[in-house]
Length: 357
Ligand code: NAD
Image (cartoon, rainbow, N blue to C red; front, side, top):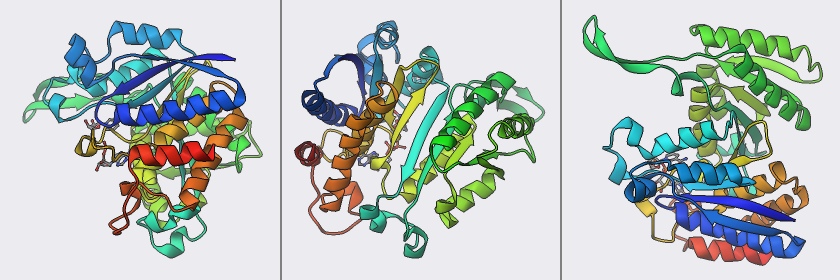
């Protein structure tokens, strides 16, 4: 089969890690007889430098015409002082909206081989954990009305959150279905003791839970969830939550796995076309030094094979290769946590993964 993949390398370590994932996809293509055609497009700071806009029209068109999209990361200090609508991060919100990607699936798995890298106490991570955060991606406060105005105490700024029944139901459906495919446990996280949007969210999730009697459903307030994630992450299987809470909790979940450089994500809508990206940023502090961990991007490519192209065997082949590389003790700098072992570079660990495929 032939698959057309739009590549959005972006800024910082983006080009390095996307190049690694492309090598892995090419090898998998050769092994299983698929052709992956890659077309690069500009996004983020590099797009601002070249065209003046963080998300050029050509990029949106190219992504819409592709079968799926692989993204590195955007942003960096060079563009930090630009006004809000010209910031590289604006492109992320823009491309998610243009592709109508309302779901973000973020797995957080503690690899047995990386137990030592987790900042949590050994007894907490002894048995590992494997959870999936289902984050709503195109609604809520990140897309609400915002602005500046004169307030009671002088100039003030405001952001607003709105969620419709339709938006909550469609993300709820993805979450319940995801739970059905895993351990059938779903926790919905909200702030229903304060926010009206959370109260509607909770009401609808409760209604939907009746359609899924096999799923053990519960609610949790976001402040408690932040604590429970570090106290007992094993209690979670699937988590569903709003855009902003999901943004924050998934970064917390990534940290307790040991490295932000390990975690993939996929953003999906109503079609098979998805946007696959590591959850970390552009890591400007190590950009261009061949130090980045490409595994999150490689695992994102594996998710693309599974969710966009229905190539589960090929996806598993990549995931197993990553497992074996870690079990053999190969580590990039971010996974060594201050030990004095010599880390592998981005290209070296990519080579190790290619050898295992
Ligand atoms: P970051 O994720 O880029 O980096 C945080 C820390 O983790 C840094 O020390 C970095 O070196 C390290 N790190 C991240 N990914 C790594 C990898 N693959 N291998 C090894 N180490 C890795 O977050 P930040 O520093 O807060 O943000 C830097 C820039 O990235 C900012 O401009 C921010 O806006 C942007 N950002 C982009 C995205 C995205 O493109 N999706 C997400 C978050 C942040």
